[in-house]
Figure 1 (cartoon, rainbow, N blue to C red):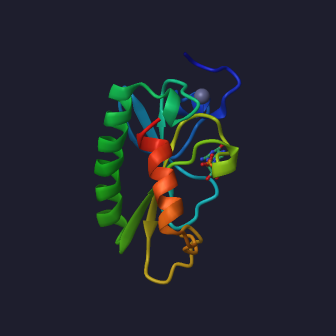
Figure 2: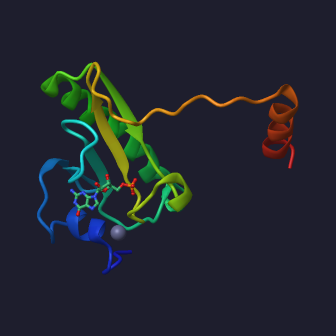
Length: 137
Ligand code: 5GP
Ligand code: ZN
């Protein structure tokens, strides 16, 4: 399943060195080279899956449990005040490396990391239309 041209395959499998915070048979958690905040890390599966929709269900479950455990350790060790898990799928959603990954982003009071969005607006009709499209088709 390894993709030879994929940088995260090489990092996850140790062919390219990285600063590793955690590793097991399934995953490696590394520090991001362009951190949003101090300690921003990435959880990478060793196997290549392009995105969440390709990910094996059992591995998806283990990914979240592993992210939770590592995030808890990071939060304590780094003295973070909060924590974001971010997971982008597709270019439109900001994914730039097409190997599934979860961002582990420690947050600090007033850190100014631009992760949250400005709330938009909707209508009851639009909400009903969306519900119908997702639930009834
Ligand atoms: P995406 O935008 O795909 O959700 O996130 C990709 C992330 O990978 C970015 O935060 C970027 O800084 C990080 N990144 C890209 N290439 C490398 C690399 O070679 N090493 C490390 N440590 N991080 C990388
Ligand atoms: Zn890959």
